[in-house]
Amino acid sequence: MTRDGQGSGSDSPDLRRTQELFWDLIAAPQGVRPGLAALRASGRMDAGDLSFMIRGDDRLAPEDRLDIYASMYFYRLRDSLAEDFPKVAAIIGGAAFHNLVTDYLLAHPSRHWSLRYLGVPFAGFLASQDLSRSFPYLADLARLEWARIEMFDAADADVLTRDEAAVAGPDLHLGLIPATTILPFEWNVAPIWRHLEHEAAHDDGGGSNSAAVTGDNQEEFAAPMSVDRPEQQKTPTLVWRQGFAVYHRTLPPTESPCLEAALRDGVALPELCEILMGGEKEPDMQAAMRTVAGLLGRWLKDGLVVRPGFVSS
Image 1: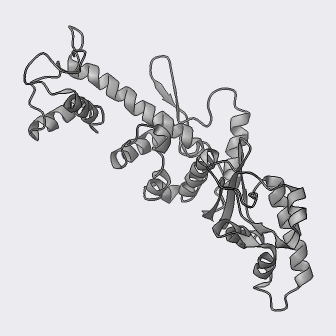
Image 2 (image 1 turned 180 degrees about the vertical axis):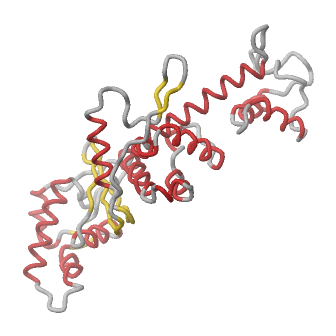
Image 3 (image 1 turned 90 degrees about the horizontal axis):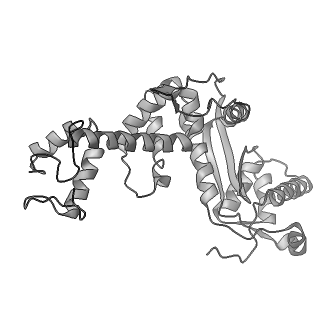
């Protein structure tokens, strides 16, 4: 391949077309040679070989050299997804995760220059796979892992302090920081996440939360980890960032509707009391006010409440 990306022949593609062909070949599902044959059959490639793109030698033809690059590209994508979804990979094991990623990339190939967005549709894809029959909670676990990534990257905000809340008093209107979301899970996956995190913290370096590790001569896949099947129940789960750390916790029935209202449109303290008393036949205002005071104290401690008037840049 010449410095400007074109071959020496007059029929060689220009730089842009060379780049497009390079992408088509390294992303070909069955490998470079079948991909090359498909391009020729469709008339999208006229060149007789790939010497205009990559040079061969006595040991490896251009197609074989490019196939090595294609394999490296796939493994980079797979490892990126394993970094984003280590708990999913740990539960199903390295071999199954490898096959899952293969199918996923066929349906959702990388379209962005950054691998940060590669896993956006992963949880939805996972819910449609046969694995969901054996692990029906796996998609919710993937949603939790992805939400933690998104909250880590969410915009910063000025957080309301206890002193500021005390000054505002009953007139305080509560809004939540951008790095906050509530996930409406069908399965209580938080205990599984906690169990796997505990195992990873006590791992001896073997990578219990990794999809695969590389051996000296061949790839060795980690075995699936045994976990207890979680309880199937609607479990709203809060995910948020405080400082540089991301947290999550399941929400009790009293807190969930209050936080959802604050997250949706913001909410005033009296409105929280109304939410808490809405389902009671004989509402107790004093009890509702005590509950709201407790919730507000926890939200302030967790750094969830945005300072009024703050505008995210």
